[in-house]
Amino acid sequence: MSPAEVVIQSTLFESLLRCVRLDNGLRERMAAAGYDPDRPRASYPASVFLRCQNLVLQAAYAGRPREEALRQMGRDLVRGYFETLVGKVVNVALKVAGPERAMKRVALSFRSVMEPVEITSTELGPKDWRVTFQGYPFPAEAAAGCCEEALRQAGAANPSAVLESDDGHGRFELHMRW
Image (tube, rainbow, N blue to C red):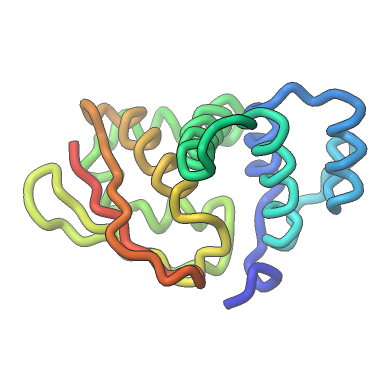
């Protein structure tokens, strides 16, 4: 599945903007990449989000190794999402659900901001899960950071996401523990 086929909701762009200080230069580069922060549409192709994500990485996470920057941006993206109107509601539900139920619903959580992606979660044991992503148009390390922060928000102590496999074409597996 190509990034152009996946549709990203504008809420995820709003969350991305919360990761960075949006000056006029970055605002112009975002618009040139296909996203106008002053006139957001309801949804965009994943290719636009990927270009904007790379702009935010350059602006806010420069100087870090790429994997570390992506993972931190994923964490910050989730925190930013929980500051949006929709995200505040989701965050309350996540805290009530707790980490185990959150893991059972990880696919639904991702589908609330992007579609179509195929995500399955498998319980391996207590506080031990494998999450498989198929057709995911963004770097695996960013997804790992998102999952870690979502679990933290759900009440998990010291969540970790270990990238077990990545084919480089949108299919990867994360081993989640807390």
